[in-house]
Amino acid sequence: MRPGLLTLSLACLVLTSGFGPPPASDIFKSQGRAASSCNTAGGFGQYVLALSWAPSFCGSNKSHCSLNECKNLSGTFAGNHLTLHGLWPQYTDAQAPSGCSYPSNCPGPAYDPSTLPSDMATYAPAYVLDGLGAHEWPKHGTCSGLGQPVFYQTAIRLFQSLGGDQGTPGALTQNIGGKVALATLQKAFGNAPPESVTLSCDNSCNLQQVGICFGADAQGNPTGPTACPQSTTKSSYDNSCVVGSGKKTPQQPMCPMIKIRAPAGTCATGATKSKNR
View 1 (spheres, rainbow, N blue to C red):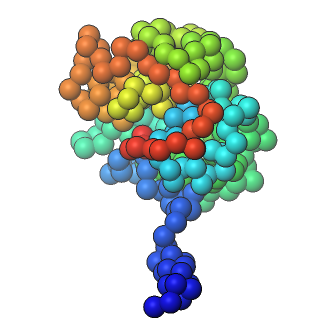
View 2: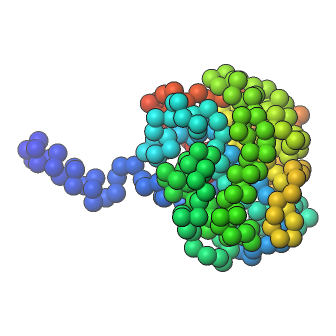
């Protein structure tokens, strides 16, 4: 086959076979906590406020660089602040039904992006730029019992309540490109005590996600910070900086020192296994 025809044939193969960067919606749908078998709204006593460190998320997998939130990350709010991943209803250890640690995919209204508050563009750019809300609302928001505008506004309010620089503590903003002690970071989130904080790292101890546990009343309204359930503190997804693959302990954590990845070059370098959304 002539070189020109070979090039054309390969191009057609790429287009027809679906090679190349996956759509943002596919990235978000294929990632995240393991599927839950519980889909009944209400009946939970806690929330996890999940916050992402975008330089690590964007640099952890080459496919993430196709996301708009990951383009030109340097100099943006997301480049040097935590951003909102989601607000997740969570059962306490005593509440959890058999085989289920949190409710998900509950019956409810369809996702409506027009209900996103304007400041989501700052605090949750993935919702505005890449459609993350189309994944987060059906999976988690529908189980909260709250309407969509209230649900998003509540997530932002909890985020801002953490203090620091718009919810991001100085332990992060002052150590970008460096390291911070695990114990320091666990105590860095305003009025949230260390037992209310989970930290997720990759295998190289780069911070990827922060979880802050809040109580919830019978109507689904968050209350103050509360101790996280064992389903999160012992989870290799939620608290991997401590437990790693599940074999480490708070006394001998996987990451005594946590790396705070800088935004520069995150999508220009090779990537390894990502920490899922």
